[in-house]
Image 1 (cartoon, rainbow, N blue to C red):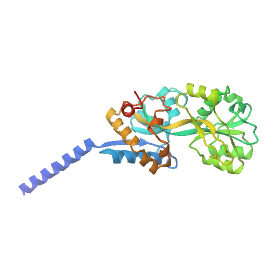
Image 2 (cartoon, rainbow, N blue to C red; image 1 turned 180 degrees about the horizontal axis):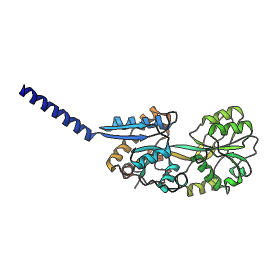
Image 3 (cartoon, rainbow, N blue to C red; image 1 turned 180 degrees about the vertical axis):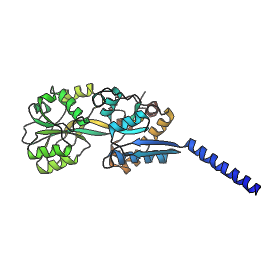
Image 4 (cartoon, rainbow, N blue to C red; image 1 turned 90 degrees about the horizontal axis):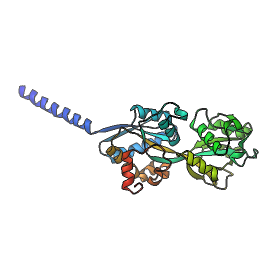
Length: 318
């Protein structure tokens, strides 16, 4: 009996040692995403799957959240290591301004930008508007109060010499904005989202719409002042009745990371992601828009050293 007890104790000791060793080698992280009905959550799940299958002992969980602002606070507090966020909201958080007035979040860094979320400016056919400069005195929805869309609208109007005092401002959701244009209570609206946007698609099929460009000197000045904007184009035909391309500005969905993570871990995860973009594109349509080359654009919050190491390795940084 004593011999059996000794053997069992030895086996138990080996098992506990194995579990302990396994626990020290596994890397368990949280990737904060967004609501389950949005893009960030399934897209984050696709990224987590690449990390978990391509990096040994990696265990990343894509967690549903309230999206950008919450994700940045979670990373800053150490309750998540990664997050998908809008790059403009990330800029506000890092610098303690606008949405984060008086609340700097110093523990956030950038891995790279992912895909564009376009600032789409739609107006009714009867409005007579052909430029943002024509917004003076018009009924314009600028998104929900305090939202990132509202700040996009403010900054773009500023590029054309206008403020919210120059318009009849409404703070409405995307759906409400489109309905307002359809029923004639609004002249135009700002919608920051992936292209195409469902609310604008419906509007285009019912009352029709005109897309207003952001281009020329105004676009240059906005991009120069706010480093998180990038120039893009809304292709003709995106919405019914819009046959020509429309110049626009975009913010970018961005992969944020805790500054407290070590360089090698972030390097491995950056490399695994950008080395397997074909799998990301297969898993989610937005993956087709992600490239390493575009990942270093629209960034105003410092890159993590691990990401820099990867970008230098492939010749995108010196």
